[in-house]
Image 1 (cartoon, rainbow, N blue to C red):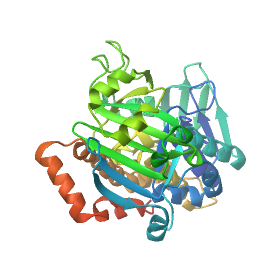
Image 2 (tube, rainbow, N blue to C red):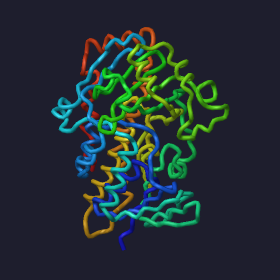
Image 3 (cartoon, one colour):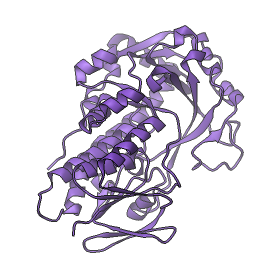
Image 4 (cartoon, one colour):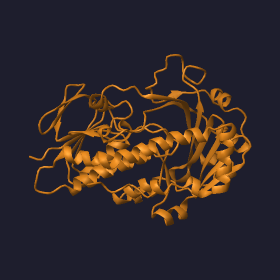
Length: 408
């Protein structure tokens, strides 16, 4: 009898995984620890590599109904407002890569994937199902949840985020790495902004030890604003001493952000002043992946943040999870029909396909954080390079032309 695959986690990565596998004819049991499906946070960016997957899954009309499609990425100095660099998006990005660059609210992308899973069929969704542990048998994986419920499948995919329990059992306890950066996130109705700030563009403001990014979401009706500064919770940045670093959002005080940013130019100040409520995240990650063994072993694999959590400085966190899911779906689709699927082999191919690309994105994201927040000679070199090299410095053909095809 053909066994289902168990997917732990019902966020963007878990739903994408379930959809990719179900489209290939694979039955899925998806376990979500919360009492209902939903997504917290604010906006995210989807490069052509991620949009290419959504198009392959038939979700481009739904994306267009929910997202914004900015015309440009503008890089400016946070303090004097000077323009540092420009990357054309919109029609230029479509011409280069065959797909657009999109910006979308996390909840809208999550809802798009959930609706697609429900339409697809072949996926059974289980709420209040938090994985406690798993056991391996010769040809299956037995998953036990905290409430005592048990699920058995041919394979287990851990899409349960940065604090993944699947990862802990698979690879051993490995503490996450604190970046020393805090992300303040807020949303602003476009109608609350001056006309000069409503343009359909992604704007990145760079300054010493800080940067701010804002872009349209929800068809341009809202703007997502993210300000990243150096600091730790419990030291004047919105959290009491001993704040739980695993807490997803923290109430944050505007004066803490203003103190961390210092004086900024008028346009940036107007954008920040329009935010009426800030949430605060401590940014954590893990070192870049060291090999395929960190992606899959036997019948168990990791996907998205469970495998390769990213700092947000390349805007690829959701995209890499979606690419992971697409790769699994393609491998399952290509498996020989009429015979039992060799899941250990399939997951090894998945790991070999994905680990080096994910490691490169992890490394590049970390490096970008250093460059964004530069001061002194490094800041001068960054600004000079942007003025001399133009779009070639901001464009990433190796990234936006993905995802790569599965390896043999």
